[in-house]
Length: 128
Image: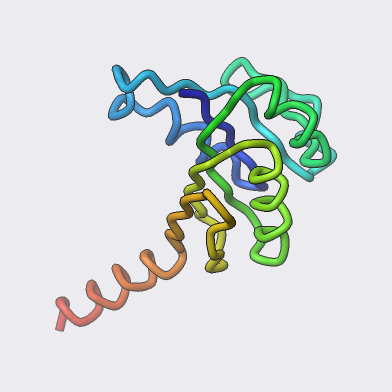
């Protein structure tokens, strides 16, 4: 199973996809995309970071079925739409925006900022 990471914080997506927990699950990071011109053209995890505009050209050739989306909330829906048109069927959305799945698509929304905020709140109440 091939996965791709998309977003400004794609370092996190890449780290997640190559994490030891996934070893033996037949999952490998196949592509990384970003909209930041300073990151596009550089390498991460041995992969060239492609511009987000190339998702619909690159992903279908790779056959990636899982995507991890990070970055700004205002770009999330567009990126998920590009992934859907490219054949990606399952998406882990780590951006701070809730996105509904498209037709024949699975989306898991996990807002890391909210989860960290919950931890901070629990820490502050447990220290009293």
